[in-house]
Length: 124
Image (cartoon, rainbow, N blue to C red; front, side, top):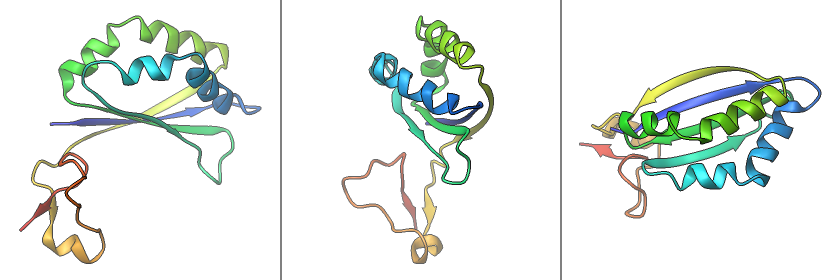
């Protein structure tokens, strides 16, 4: 079962965006994406809140998250978060292994063959 954690980083004076930019430019994001079990590690910027950055962080399972949390990456992330004086809140989601019910097909396009089952899967 895939696990997705949405982390909202909030700062002032554009620091949340600076943090995300440095995470990418320093290679930390590349290294995290290469970790076993990482499915997605991607930043998004809310249009109506210039001081917040959303990280969508998805892992294959809890074991993969635990290994990531025990890795040297966490020290680098923590150091950058402190450098930019960020505050965070998180939401955790687990994949619905049953997928989307067919009744959702009217509103949610069902997957093409190229989309993996953890992203979208239709139920009859």
